[in-house]
Amino acid sequence: MSNGDIFVGEVIGTAILILFGAGVCAAVTLRYSKARASGWVVIAFGWGFGVLAGAYTAAPLSGGQLNPAVTIGIAVDTGKWGKVWVYLLGEIVGAMLGAVLAYLVYLAQFQANVRKEGTTEGTADEPVPTLGIFSTIPEIRNWIANLITEIIATMALVLPVLAFGLTKGLGESGTTVLIVSLLVVGIGLSLGGPTGYAINPARDLGPRIVHTFLPIPNKGTSDWGYAWIPVVGPLIGGALAGLVYNAAF
Image 1 (cartoon, rainbow, N blue to C red):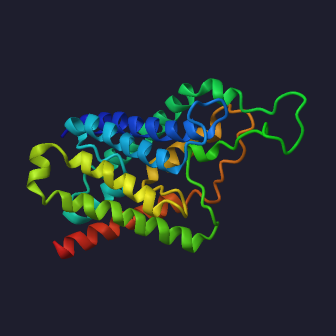
Image 2: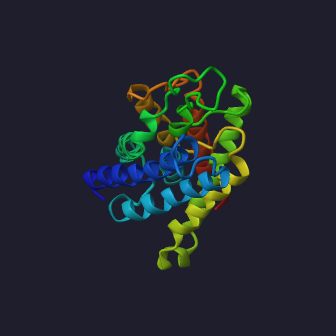
């Protein structure tokens, strides 16, 4: 794969992933959305379908990694680091692009994210916080616990992804991406409660950058004090998964 193919594939695939993922979060979160308050299960499946669409689209060009933690895990296992920077750059750019596209899809809802004239504090018309649409927010802010959660959850993603490569039938049938998508849904349902399961540095960092600059009414903070957790945790988890896989398999 050429550097150009890898970059384009990762940009397109990651953009689709974030379009679906941030899109489902916007659908469930924003006022005047038909899917408002649909719940966590809808969010988990929305992200899973985002992986499905993004990875299948990017696979012919780049292999569809879409996640720096996966990229690092593969590099740790194989020892091949030469193209890692191309993957990482494509993933970050794609995540930012996907966040902008999701914003445009829900533009009217974001613009309506204001308190209606004549309402008072504490009513149902309070502006809806928007950071959770783009990036993860912990339910309990405990850096050690949050970091541990992201490390373990990312290992639960990357280690099976690496192991799927040993299952010849999955690759031949073309169902590897489908299985990974279901894995992401499972991680969201089982391990996503504490931190919102970033498990992907690009997925959190790219949209957080976009949230900082988008002209969203009443958007609130981008919470940069927490932003290192969903970057460092998944990178550690991906590297550990690569080490474990290399030693065990």
